[in-house]
Length: 214
Ligand code: GAR
Image (cartoon, rainbow, N blue to C red; front, side, top):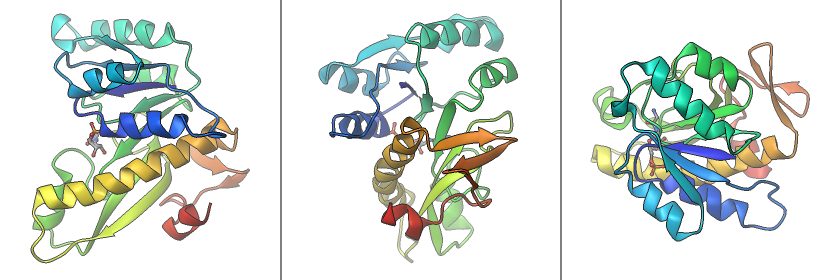
């Protein structure tokens, strides 16, 4: 796996930790960031994972940036590319190149709250439930087939920061779980649908109760 990050890298660390467990079936080859200041780069280095930076600011166009990003990723020959707090929108060519081999984790119960600032927007909307989703990356922003979701309650006096931390804890459990399925050959993208164990997953992905049983 190659993991793309832009910031803290706590999901990256959760994935690395999971990859060190016996029988998980995957390894993290590199962490690549568009942001040279991403704290996740240091965290990866500290645990012996290769890192690279492809700074989007150094390119005239998104296509130029993505061409270099793609060759940097491909140098590691990954079976799967994981977006983990990667905060750049990816263009059609890049997405097509990895179609079926690129996942994203998003801090909301998709299809609700695509885009940024999800926790604040959930509070403003008065939602009673929130969570995280893992999905295949397709050309539709945060819109690819959902593989699995985990749900947390929203309490009256929550702040965005408190809610973000509650969701993040679930992300750290959810993402490695889904990656393990992919590594075991159980998960595919077929006809723009997520398929697990030859069963098309429902639109909201694997129901949370079933995720926890696996
Ligand atoms: C995570 O909450 C992830 O779901 C979110 O950014 C955070 C990264 O944290 N991703 C997005 O918002 C993508 N649109 P991390 O760097 O500590 O893993």
